[in-house]
Image 1 (spheres, rainbow, N blue to C red):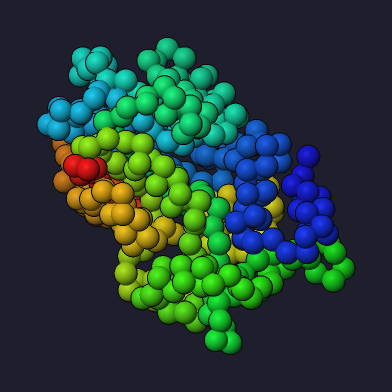
Image 2 (cartoon, rainbow, N blue to C red):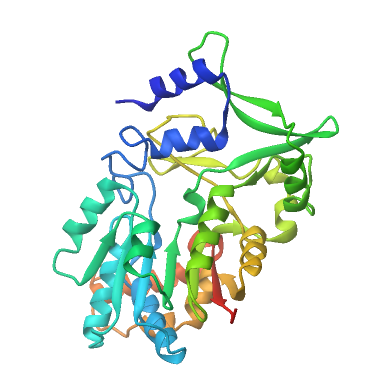
Length: 360
């Protein structure tokens, strides 16, 4: 089943969809949504790579960090990974713990997609991991939580809404049908809700209102649920690509940061290939930080991924080798370490935010 007929049917009925509504259908429709269907998405035959696919050194650094954070802060020995995808990261962490003789830490994965839950069960058959389908299931399993929350490239997967200040008022950018009712097109709709006006004035106070401005209320609501559920001293690590402060006012973001990834190519038109393409955007870290403060969560660290991995001991993974074969395990791992430190996207495009729940 293609998602396009579903979109056309919805637009014939309502005439206009917010970008949030469009992304919900294109990405998360139970049968036709990109994340929910059984097409391969990650890796050589998919649409994009994640850091854990570059090398197991990524998971090893995090595995050591999780152990240290739990021990130094006397946390409950539980690590929760949201959006496990292919399971490579979990496998790297659990394999590292096995070599370290760490057996007392529970590893929980929360994955919304039934297809990816199936993949996780196949990939992690012999490893001690619990796989759940939602945050609600997690909260039922752990009514009280004081451990570690980890999410790599999850925040950018929540549907967003887009706004622009025009003619002395806020307008929302959405999706409609062209006159021939065959192609999708962007359309603006004036916002009449005074409460939303006030909210947008606050969220985009320091932003250039002539730009297309993005906010994922779904992401902020998800973070709120996690912050409110977790207890004092819980640690949160979010890894994603995003911008902070005045970086958002750079000219190249005039039309927003939303885009697609299709067969390892960037697609600048987010309405292309509905249901067959990943739709993503850069995270607004200011929104994440300010939202956390409201719920007693402090941002205690923020760094580019390369700097973060370097600080956490990535260089210890470099090994002297007598091997002459450039494709040996040692040489490939050494190249991966350099890639994480020097590659423009892996080192500088991604950021790591570290947060901690304060005393209530």
